[in-house]
Structures are given as C-alpha cells and as structure tokens.
Length: 356
Ligand SMILES: NC(=O)c1ccc[n+]([C@@H]2O[C@H](COP(=O)([O-])OP(=O)(O)OC[C@H]3O[C@@H](n4cnc5c(N)ncnc54)[C@H](O)[C@@H]3O)[C@@H](O)[C@H]2O)c1
Image (cartoon, rainbow, N blue to C red; front, top):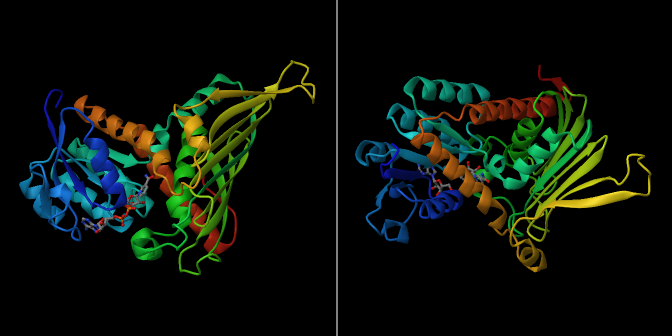
C-alpha cells in the first residue's frame, strides 16, 4: 500500500460524508472513485471527475475495486455495512457511534482483526490538538491529583429542532446522549480511563420527542476523581465544547465554541498556594483564534470539526499505508459504547451502575 494511489468510496453522502469527501480531496496519493447514497441526485457535482455513483453499497463493493471507505450513514446501518466492507477486504472508517451496541462493536473489531483490515472508529475529537495537549498536561503532573472533571457538549438545529434519523430511535440509537455525550465519554476514557460508576439523567423537555434532547451523566473514576458530562441539543449559542479539570495543583479549562477557543491552566503563583496569587496561563491558542473570536452571527459553523476530522482521516490512511492497526482507538470505541449502554440503563433503572 505504501506508494499506491488508494481508491476511496464514501457510503452516505449527507453532511458528514460531504465533509469526508472534501477533506479527502486535499490528501495526496488518494482518489475518491465512488460514492454511494440512495437519495442523492445523479447530476450533482459529486458525479464529476469520473466518480461513480451507486445507490447500493453492495454494488459499489463488487464493482469499484476500493481500498478503503468512509461509512457516514445513520448509525443503524454502520454495523451491517462495516461487516460487508470488511468481508470484502476494504479498510473502514466508521463514523461515530461505531455501532448501536457493545456486542456489535466487539464483533466488528474481531472480524477486522481476523481479516487483517483496518477498522477506524470516527471519534474525531481524539485527534483534536487541544485534547492531545490536555493529555500531555495531565501526564506531566502539572495539574496534580484530579478531583472534579466537568465536560459539556451542545449544539442546536438552526432554530428548528432535530430532524430526519436523529429523531428515530431505531436509526440513531438515542438522542443527545448517543450523539454528543458519546464524544465526551470517548475523550474522558482517552484522558483518564478507568471510569467505574455511571449514573445518568435525561429529559426531552425541549422538543418532546421519543429521544432525549438533554442529558447529564455522572461518573466516578478509579483514581478517585468524580465527573459530570452534560449535553444538549438546544443551545441557542451554537456549537460548544467545554471541559474543566480541577486538580490539586491547578485547574485546566477548555472552551471551544463558535466564538471562542481557549485552553488555559490556572495555577498558584507560589509554592505557598496563597489564595490571591493565582496566575492564568494560556497554554495553547490554535491558529486563527483571534479572528474566530471576533466573528459574530456565525451559528453551527463547521470550523470546530475541521482540524480534528482532517487529522482523523490522515491517521486512518497512515495506518493502512504502514500496515498498523488502530487498536487503542477500537478499544476506546468499544468502551465508549459500554459506557453509553450503562448510561441508558441507569436512566431506565433510575439508579447508579457500577461498570467494573
Ligand atoms: N464525528 C462527528 O463529529 C460527526 C458529526 C456529524 C455526524 N456524524 C455521524 O455521521 C453519520 C452521518 O451523519 P450525517 O449528519 O451526515 O447524517 P445525514 O442524514 O446528513 O447523512 C446520512 C446520509 O446517509 C444516506 N444513507 C442512509 N442509508 C444509507 C445506506 N444504506 N447506504 C448509503 N447511504 C445511506 C442518507 O441518504 C443520507 O444522505 C452519523 O453516524 C453521525 O452520528 C459525526
């Protein structure tokens, strides 16, 4: 694979599939040769440049001689499509949630291993430079012992409300907990691991659908820390990711919204820990942040997802080219699904559940 031009197919050309399509255009030695979506118009731009359009992915797998695919359909279809791609010898990047249940995630992982195929879960935030920087800061010991972790992710639906498969529990697997909290469970598993207890609450008070539009998950970690992940589909301020980690030596704060990107560590100036000598150190400001924070009236901008998605796609390609297997990311996705299942069970049973 090292010097070959890789042939890429995209299955599901909605919002996310188009993003993958766009980013693949910027990568050398790779060509999107086929797209599959039963609903898109044959005349659209994606048909140009010799790209073949299929309505059924099974035809695409038979005819297009693909090396790799991005699977960007609604979640319900991920498992079956991934199985068929792996069985056809095609490397797969599967958007999150990788599957709707843990046992399906485990079966996919096993099959990929047996067939020597790269299976890459699409948890793009693990490839976000800010999250990677946070991992470094934690590992350096700069924060000391962690006591409280607060995370939140929210967005809105352009002032309307959730639509399409998002509101159909069979196709989506759930609401904001599956959609948004899953990202942060994956991130917290990546940063800290060892989540031992889960307790969750949810409501559908914003849109009154049969999937939750707001959720809170409380967590207890093996290292003694406690945490809360909160998510909402009804944040009129737009897309927002926040994380704060309170440690015995310092507090780290991430704010990543359409208006502002901040990653800072607040710590005591002297070793005596004087209460009024706190310093704020902005440890990381991504490029272009100053301009971004001045913009107004930009809602649901995709800019926050750009860098980490590009990094994810590049990593996926590098594992194929170098014959590596993204084992830690698969383990992360499986654990994330276990934790989501615990959270939904906790909501149903109205109690806190031990995950070990
Ligand atoms: N990682 C992220 O940050 C992120 C962001 C957005 C969406 N996603 C994930 O990406 C996936 C797609 O989400 P979206 O927002 O693009 O949805 P979407 O509704 O915009 O697009 C889904 C597309 O899949 C097509 N489709 C449905 N069944 C198909 C099938 N059997 N074969 C081929 N195509 C099929 C639909 O026609 C539609 O065009 C979901 O799993 C979602 O959770 C991830």
